Length: 324
Image (tube, rainbow, N blue to C red; front, top):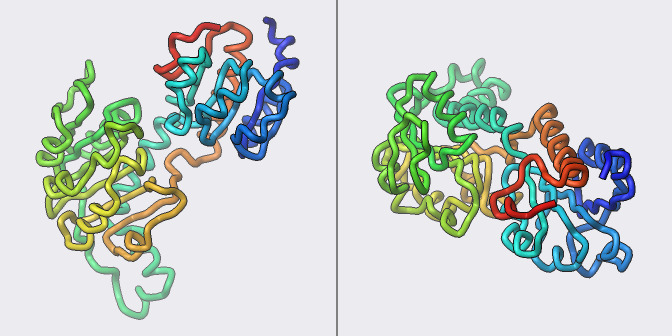
């Protein structure tokens, strides 16, 4: 198929999509919108015509099955746990994501979140803005500091390695835990998360959501991290046992936590909000204009590459065997 012929291909967008991605798709394909990824909303025309999905929402097996001519699901985001990629792979449907283009932005956010958590910078700014500096004097000395810390990274993929590079520049020793050692990575490897937590005082989670990582950071891991320990989660909320974390923060089993992700977003437990030894962000790791537009472009480019060349730019492992 030539590039000029793609305008006859129907791409379905269920729910919201980044406007730049929608514009790119509309320029090249026939764009169809749907309120949400609900099989009951799929019309006979959609079932017949839709060959691609572009989404940033849950795409389950039932929705995939409702589109018998579906060839590709282009996911907006590096994490694609909301897409049943294993089922798509069994059905011969390609799934793509948007890695690399957000690596530096998320790594920058992780380091910023760590510094905010340790030095309490958002609270210090609020102290100034509320006029308390002038009325009451300087903000309290922060209990935490980067000085003398050691960092452990749970998930030494692209983003984990970018975080490690940044922290190494601050002079922090680095260690990590993955399912297996990463070739060419110079940092100390631990074959268990518990072992990593016991060896460091700063645990940064970049792990994806999967059955093996579900609530992997539990009470035992937090105890191993220790009273000077800090947890930073920039990966997925499901990797942390939130009840255990709240308890560990409340009784000072660990010093503090900085979280950009939560188990049931956008809901954040009131008990977390009430704790002063937390720095909480609304899942903004990659949320800059330049990075989100780069993600949108990669999503659209994956669709074009699939239909023109039969080979997308960034297939996920579960569907790498699917041919165009």
